[in-house]
Amino acid sequence: MPLETGTIPVPFGWFRVADSAELAPGAVLATRVCEREIVVWRTERGEARGADAWCPHLGAHLGVGGTVRAESLVCPFHGWEFGPDGRNCAIPYSDRTNGRATLTTHPVIERNGLVLAWIHPHGAPPTFDVPEFPEVADPEFLPFIVRAYEINTSVQELGENGIDRCHFPVVHLADEPPVIAEYDGSDDVAHVRTLVELKTPFGDFPGEIEVYQYGPGVSATRFVGFVDTLLVATQTPIERDRCELRFHFTVRRTGTEAEAREIAELYVGHIDEQAREDVPIWEHKAFVPRPALSDVDGPILEYRRWAARFHVAEALAPE
Image 1 (cartoon, rainbow, N blue to C red):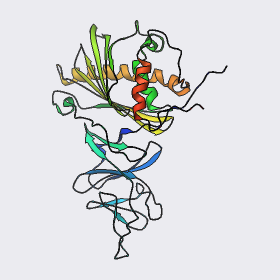
Image 2 (cartoon, rainbow, N blue to C red; image 1 turned 45 degrees about the horizontal axis):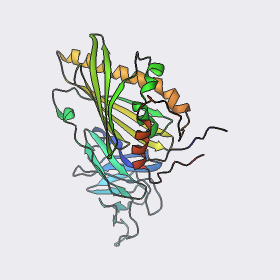
Image 3 (cartoon, rainbow, N blue to C red; image 1 turned 30 degrees about the horizontal axis):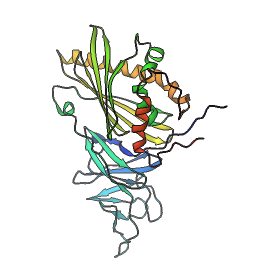
Image 4 (cartoon, rainbow, N blue to C red; image 1 turned 90 degrees about the vertical axis):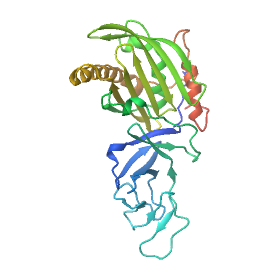
């Protein structure tokens, strides 16, 4: 019998739609998230907003030529204005507004220098928050070093890779697979603690990697044992099988600025190398809903049950 394969639904959750620094007051950006065209803008008072990009009047893309006037988003086609709640609040050539002309808006928060939008196919409200990570605002830590990739896979495959311990010796040539000491996927925020051997130019150090995954779109990874390091990863679905992966690294300043940056680049280079080694696997693998696992593969099924929390249709449809 042929192997049963399936597709993974596009999840809902908090997803990066911009960096805070690129969204100045009055700025309007276009992006694509969860198979939707999204427009993101910042009002003159400084609040970030997000909505589906199509104007309900005659369909113009509000992220292409749209502007901000005070607290309103202005359509580039006919100049219709939409307020923070998405409702049409002005038509330049009419004394009346149109009550049916309302944008599909999405909750937006700013955390850790990132603009995050809550995207849910049915418009359901957020079920959890993404906190501020103290390292980001701490002057003892370096500014973020960023690496970004667009990959032909789903965000669920990216997350599963982190707890698939037995691929590390094969794909990444690790001496031993990491030891997953703890996995808890009982809440919307999953927690993983892994024991590793940190290999550095200064010697090998026993260490821990602790991950908190805030839904499918944001995770905070802390490396402990050599120098305090935070990796904020964002995984944003573009299409069902295409996503953007971004790594944001910071390390505690130790020694001189140059020495701290050298250590940061060491971590960046290591994780970047591993990601690039994984890409050919991600882009050519099939999703097997009922995998034939070994007894030491890691908590893969537990992770999949957690990921299914963010599927509107939890059943994974066979192709």
